[in-house]
Length: 453
Ligand SMILES: NC(=O)c1ccc[n+]([C@@H]2O[C@H](COP(=O)([O-])OP(=O)(O)OC[C@H]3O[C@@H](n4cnc5c(N)ncnc54)[C@H](O)[C@@H]3O)[C@@H](O)[C@H]2O)c1
Image (tube, rainbow, N blue to C red; front, side):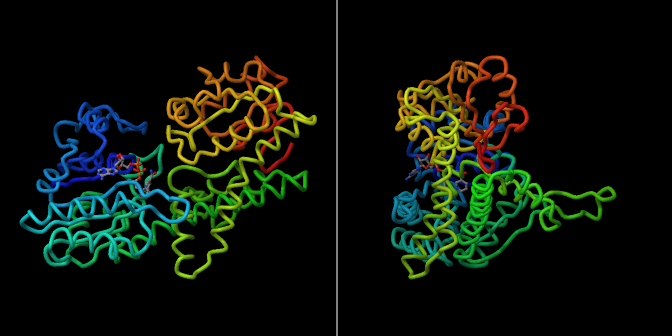
């Protein structure tokens, strides 16, 4: 099929290269000329495993990028909308989605034949039918369900493993205003394996499935953190051991009859049940807050999800407090040099959006510490947010050399080398593990979230 994708961020670009890999002819559209140029040159503007190879394979053949929305829509059968939907502190900001809906509508006015417009951006329930569809009708002068279709196809990829997630999805949600829209959307995914569940539903339900999924994962993280904080306060309990005990329950690690005798497989959600310094990124915080605000505007309170956000907000400060307790004194951070290991909100990405590293660094600076940061790939991105208020180390060893305190903030596998690096170069540094990545026996005086000092 001929497919246009508007917005070439994490979701739009990964969708584009993966659909090209699946045999479609894809045109990616963005207002950012530099991104368009990079994509056409086969240079990925974001860091994602597997993306460089797929882009190199398809750029210039069945994947091209352009700033010309009109040509892209006229030349395609299906248009995906994958622009950002930030949370403005009060409500979800739909301005980019609305702009694209109006622009695509204007092109549809000139286009013969049926066209499907699919919202892929995460939007609060009702947006596709009540905001996007009327804009498309108004600007095209045509009728949805007759002249064109409106679909909603939420994206569940995780940054860092986005290509793998897209190519091997756990489900495909086929939202559509009518059966024809759902059928055309189903055809886009026809070559994905028959084992992948397809959920045909209306647009509003498709939108809600995305929020429910993110909220569920975020709630697991805050659940683990709330219990972890209690374990640390009570003393003598390691929340990591507690969660290992929880993970072993048959609901989380069921026996698989087909597996080798006694074989059990741990459910992926157990990974979220782990103490840490909180979730970040472009999705969990904004989506949970947007859903709460959407509910609130309709007179529905969401006390559980409100608590999920509140607990999460408190986690970076717990990490800094643990370090302060270890350093001791009236002004424990004043004049101290602190190494922050990891800046990206999770490993495998350079995305800094709502990363817990930001409040951690801010609290350290506010306490009077001099911060040296290291991240395997996110330092150029981090510089845009943190600027020159922190020093950037070229590697792990340089970051911890001479530091009074060391905070592990992102679960980069590279940081597993830390016990050896500390032992060799700076054994006296106060270490606090914000992700419980390091074996607590491997660093003398180990402190960690969910354990205490
Ligand atoms: N990042 C994720 O992990 C993830 C996962 C699932 C869903 N989502 C959702 O997908 C959507 C996109 O997220 P993202 O992280 O890819 O965003 P992003 O900010 O990385 O990319 C958005 C892109 O849209 C472009 N854009 C803005 N206005 C435009 C316009 N009028 N025409 C053309 N292009 C325009 C921007 O230049 C940018 O390149 C959001 O709703 C997000 O919540 C994101």
